[in-house]
Amino acid sequence: MSHFVSLKYFSSQEINEMLDLAAQMKKDPKISKSALEGKSVGLLFEKASLRTKTAFYLGAQQLGAKVIYYSPQEVKLGQREEIADVARTLSMYLDVVVVRTFSHGNIMKFSEISSIPVVNALSDLTHPSQALADILTIREIKGNLKKLKVAYIGDGNNVCNSLIYAFSILGGNLHLAIPKGYRPYRSILDEVKSYHRISGAKIKITDLVLKAVEDADVLYTDVWTSMGEEKEKGKRKKAFKNFRIDDKILSKAKEDAIVMHCLPAHRGEEITSSVIDGKSSVVFQQAENRLYTAKAILAYILKK
Ligand code: CP
Ligand code: NVA
Image 1 (cartoon, rainbow, N blue to C red):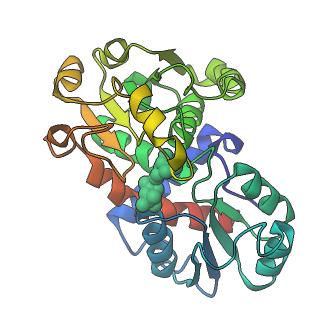
Image 2 (cartoon, helix red, strand yellow):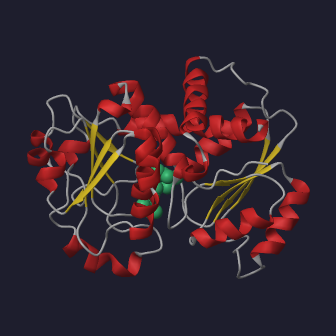
């Protein structure tokens, strides 16, 4: 049985297989049309979601599955009921469960107990299904990842961590401009070094935004305050005030650079309206690709 809790458990070949499947599904909706025929998919969401919920809900339905959605008020992992009991119970009914929760530990615990595949739909540590859609988008527009310079500006959060894993495994140059105190865990930066020897990836980290974006092919950002961190909003606004993608920053990247954001976006904070609504922005192509990559993840793990 194969879970999808972090990209770090997949080889570059496996990730590329999922990306290829997503690209095929995008091109021809008939591909794998009955991959989930007769299957039941549960979506257990403890946080708000627009894209991830729609992508997995609609994606599972398009592949022939029945879908049950559990909203943040219903299950309350570890509060209303122990995680292990939820995992054991759902394993009796469903074929796969897609979980969005607060602590990554919840996902790990769930997947250790569950006898059906568990898909991580975002935790405080990682957002692997997002990274897959991000890579598909970059590949569609820019081609070979290994030849690109990608600059991530902002918080060293779940989205950033999954990008680090994706680039480390697949190759490419990822430059992170992140203020001190908000950088990815040292343990993650150390852990991915072993991949770099194989993939040739380079991950650099700086607090100089201009250095990271200079001649970049791709600029990427995410919110300064993630779900679950709302109490830190004021403090974070101050810490990140110079880590915003605006027209001046964009002008330092390559002429044909693209701008990415996982969404939801806060215009005027991590990105200006003129950039996210401007000609370099590919955020809705990126959002659209969440659907094809969600479908590919479901079809891939259920086939394994
Ligand atoms: N990017 C993303 O995961 O969006 P949602 O939070 O709306 O699902
Ligand atoms: N970092 C954000 C991503 C939302 C898709 C969060 O966790 O809220």
